[in-house]
Image (cartoon, rainbow, N blue to C red):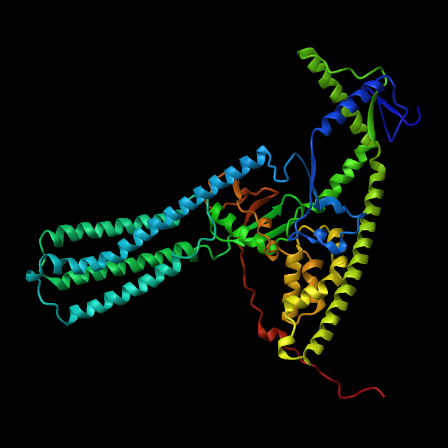
Length: 537
């Protein structure tokens, strides 16, 4: 045979072949059975809702034939309900609800502990000053001028401490971390032990003996407030200043498309470094687009789709009975098929690069063509807006068109070109009709140019640019061999994983830099220019 290659009794070749008619009737019977079974199920096609991308637009719904995968935005679901859910979806939703409840409970519990500790800290100095007046007022000595001046000192120090604690600790939480922040927990324990120690000393030396020297009690309260201010200064050093100096260079790689960014971080724990990386990720990384990755997969599937398996020695065996011998034979059959398929695919590998080259060239040509059409359509629409604005200036104030109405009026003229461009560049799932109209109204309100309007669609932006919340991962999973509360080290590797992709983070320590000075004598740059008085004629 010229078009066949035999491997272990099997022949592989592309397209339709002569084939064997030995099991033709059996295949037709199985096909009839499958058709009967398929009639019992109802196939429901869910169209895109109006708030979804432009594929649901009635202005362009008449275009049925598309050459750039127009059907990617429709979903085919088998079943009797348009709102059917699989068992995996139910399990995932239940797990998300449990995780959210657990995170909320832990957040509120931590907030409650912080509030209780804060009230204990601020009420303790006041209690030190008030309790002697309530328990033994007749024994207290009169408070002189120096004592009254200490009252003013305590009041202002407590006000400063209140503002400093509010600015440092009572900020909106940026994220929920898997473990406690070690330094913050140590500071809380230190403050608790400190206040308890002051209460024990106060109870033994002042309450039991009913000390009559009220000025000494006031000075004792002032010393407590001073110590609390020093602890707050320690908190600023540990929580804010310690991490400012860069010590490590981290490389962040997205697993799907290999997008890489580099950042400098200070002395941070692994979980705090992961939080800093995620904050940079949403602002620096372009949005993850799974549709761009489907081209290579479809290309590989297309190369293997034309390969068929035939048994040249006889019929394919019927479904064998259960048994170890039959299972081993089936496994050997599948293994032989896969080996022969890989060999046949390798034979066609020599021409695959040509197909890839022409596919990419054709895609770039189509993108340039539709980009040009989009630019022209948008410029014409903005020119129409300028004409409308000139006409509205001549009208009465009540007849002036709102920017939202103006955007809805000119949007149909550019909708078709924008739709085709977004489909070609695989961005149709990132922009809905509502978001495009809002962006158009925003550009009209602020008197922006057509180029400013198109920049959001011609250049993929970071994730935060897109208004839809489900593009931002709700929960990330931190995977690390070392403890997440331990500090970063040279060579540390950890993973930030969400549903669609993961971020691989590698850490390198910034090297120690040795600089030396070389002195250059300023006189070494001086020179003398001597000119001859006699010149040749």
